[in-house]
Image 1: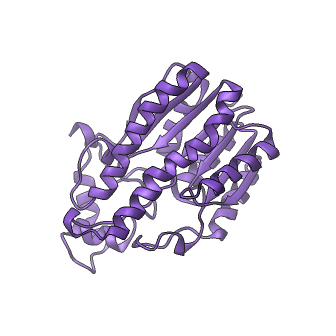
Image 2: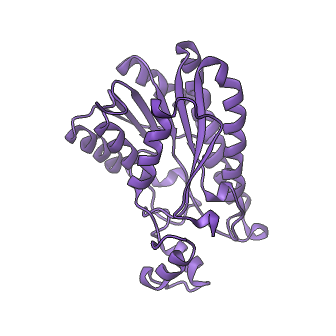
Length: 278
C-alpha cells in the first residue's frame, strides 16, 4: 500500500523541478489523481532572470506520471489569477471527484539589493510567491471545508525563516507564506484540514542553476560558471552537499501530506542539509 492510496493531489508549479518531482513521488505512492498546473509561459513572469517552464514541460510531467501508472490532469494556469485557480479546482473535482491535498509549490526567484529593486520586480515576486499561494488556497479551501478533510502544504524556503542579502522581496514573500500558513492552520483545524509549510534550502532545479544565481554567488562576476560557485553553495550547509535533489523535498512533503502526519498542523519543516543550524 502507498501512503497516497486513493488521494487526489493538486500541485501548482508542476511543470518541472520540485513540482514535477512531487507529482512523480505522489503518483508512485498510489495517488488516484495528480493535477499539475503551471503558467508554462515565459512571458508569465518578465522579471525572472531565467527561462520559465513551457507547455511541453507541463505535458512531459503528465506523461511521466502516466508512465509510472498514475493519472495526471495537466492544466495551464497562473496562480496570480483567482479565476484560473478556481477553474483548476473545478476541473479537478469534475475529473476526480475531490481534492485531498494541495501542494502550493509555484514560485519564482530574482535578485537585487532592496533599495535597487524595481517596483515591477517587487510586485511580481509578491504576486506569485505570496498572493498566488493565497489564491491557490482560497480556491481549494471551501471544497476541503465541505469535505471536512484535507492537507495543504505551502512551499516556503529557508528564506521564510531568515534574511538573505539581495533577496529582500523573496524573503518578504516567503516569510509571508509562513504567516498565511499559521492563520490558515487556526482557521481550518475545526474543519479537519491541516496546513503546514516546508522550507528547502538550495535544490537542484533551474531556480539555482542559472547565470543570475552564479553571478550572485561569485560576488558579481557576470560570466561565473557553475563549477566556480559550487564550493560557495557547499559552504552554506552542515552536510556535505552543495544542494539537494528535488526528490529530497518530495519525500518530506509526502510524509507531511500523508495520514502519518495526521496531527501535524501549523508547523514549519526544514529540509536544508543543516543550513539553519550552522
